[in-house]
Structures are given as structure tokens and as C-alpha cells.
Length: 250
Image (tube, rainbow, N blue to C red):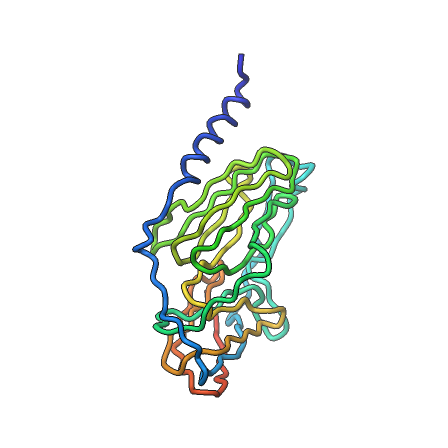
């Protein structure tokens, strides 16, 4: 006779398979016309936080403590010298012409490691096959939601009951994906599914650089989980570098 835990796992696997197999209408995906951008310009700058830094987020694991660890504090936003912001996603929207995407050296991965997602922030091109992996000897259910305004929609949902288990998920629609574990509520990561190759993730000192951009006026979007989305108008000149500082507020 099946136990309650076995029934729960079977139900999770069935739901995961159904939702994980859902596809996105390709007509909803927008892409820029490819160009060599021989006279392209560049954007360089930093992302900084303006105001009083927020207090930490309290992490309180409630199960699988031997893997997830004990209660602890984690920063809501990682700040460096002069309040520079590490791990913010910076990208251009509304791009009509763009250089081709560079093929990644290896498939992008989101891994469950000691009840954390690694990496916590990453960017992948639209249409990417994302590898969802479990490095822990416990059940995780990795669930990705595409953020659309005030709503969220499942784009992948995979139960991973065994260490070393993995699934592939095709990310067909551009936007920010909020990744959670349905088993361990404190786990969270973010993925930008990019519709053009003009993006960056800020470094330790908050710096970013985006190159080979066709000249024109654009909107530079900066996303950080605590502050949300900030939009900055920018102008790119042929064969020149425009410096920009983005201020995030909460």
C-alpha cells in the first residue's frame, strides 16, 4: 500500500511532467533584425543604490536541515564600495537591429546546491535549452515563472527527487523568469531570457559594459529583485562609448 510520501511524490512528478511539457507560441517571440554593427557604439557604467540599504532577508529552513542549513540572514541587495550593486541585470529593450547572439561554450545550467540555486542570476538568449539540475540528495521541485506585468506564468516545473537528476527546458519567450523551489520556500533565482544580445550582469564593483550597439536611442533596463525594474533613456553614438550611472531606489 503506497505511503503518503510516495503518493505526494507521484503527484508532484505528474504535475511537473505536464507543466514542464507546455510550450510557448513562437509567434509571441520578438527578435531584432541581425546586423554586423560595424559602426556600433558602447555603453559602460555602474549601477548604484540610492538611499538607506535595506535590512537582510531572514532565511529559516523548515526541512532537510542537514542539507539546507540553519536559520541565517542574507542580503536583499549586495552592495560594494560607494553603494555599487552586484548582480543586477542590465539590458536594452526595443532593439530593432542587433548583432548575432554568440553561441555559449556550454549549455546554461541552473543547479540546486545545498538548497540554493546556482547561479542566482543569469542571462540566456530566447530559445535556449536550459539544463535544470539537482546536486542535492533530497527532493527539489524547480519551478520557473515568467513575469508579465503583475502576473506570473509557469514556463518550466520539474520535480528532481534524486541527486544528479536533470531536465532540459526550452525558454521560448523573452522576459524575466522567477525561479523557485516548491519544496524549500526560501530558494529563489532570476533568469533574463533575452531577445537581443545587448545585456550584462553587474560585477563586484557594480560595473557593466555593453558593446557593438547600432547607433540610436534606446531604453536601458536594470533589474534587481529588491528594487524591481528601472528604465533609463540612453543614446548610442557610432564608434563611441557612452558612460551612464543607473541609480536604484526602493
